Image (cartoon, rainbow, N blue to C red):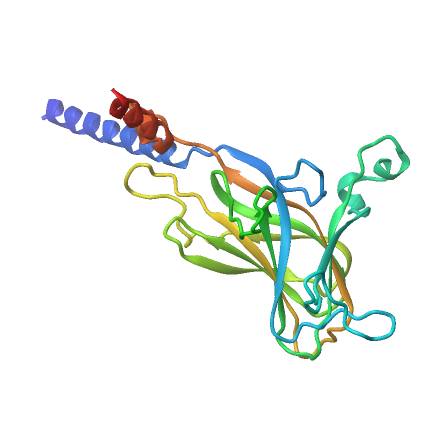
Length: 266
């Protein structure tokens, strides 16, 4: 009887060890902070940021009030973007201003104007610098992202910003980043809902998200004439841990393509 009880206790202990080991492996985390975009406008920056707006966007006019035309004879419209020598001091400090030999720190500025109030919107999206057609480019997000943050300068207007993300199935999520009804620079942070899938049951298990764009919304109660918004340092906190197993290299699509290409060449 004692021998049987001893065997039962041993089995229980072994089961607990296996459960705790599996749990520990599943919950292993390796947090890393990554900057997806500096918004500094450097020559070697991979992205050019483009804009698109809803129907009531205003035409750009000269000092006489006449519409401005581009090289093709089309009327130029807002929004316009440029890089300005301004940045959040909370991040870069006063030394960045005092040191004339330091590399310039800039932010991406957006200037907009609509003809009427309402739920107007402006999209701010990346394109690859070497893409002459300026096709929208979705930025791959490494790891399994926990949150996204960006510094945004606001003028106390009752607008808000959304972040659009795409999962591995092609589903796009519009997530509210935050209101910009404040003055000056503020860090806006978005926690990624756990309901958004970032892994698969089958190999390869990794299924990272992609950053699609920002969308700025105006509200009917707020003025929409000649407003400015600035962006600096799009950053993520992400879990880069990947469990290793015997043959884990065969779960890497790039490695598998290389192996099979070599076999086909024989």
